[in-house]
Image (cartoon, rainbow, N blue to C red; front, side, top):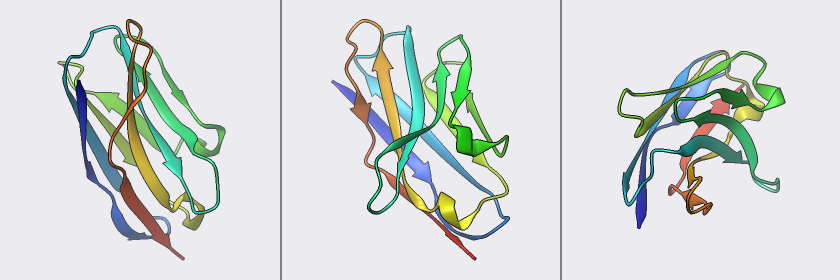
Amino acid sequence: QVQLVESGGGLVQAGGSLSLSCTVSGNTFSRNVMGWYRQAPGKQRELVANSFNRGPTTYGDFVEGRFTISRDGAGTTIYLQMNSLRPEDTAVYYCNYRSYVENVDYWGQGTAVTVSS
């Protein structure tokens, strides 16, 4: 079993910054990808950013250089630094973990980000 614990999020004005973190524990494998997805009301869940353990990172097109994903040295915690936030960034942000061994998606409980105009 894999557990994901998220923290961060909240309310911020447009142009402001927020950071999210997510720690994975349990039966994990080193060859994995962790990332953040988001889902706004009435919309599909979409990729925000991915971090391949000891590998590259990828971002959704809408990020446009405003967000940065990173990992700690142990590779079990990821961070998402979000700058220049826009009202359209308002959504519930979900942490995701998937190992190459299991190829199963695990999700955090979600954390709300609200950007006011």
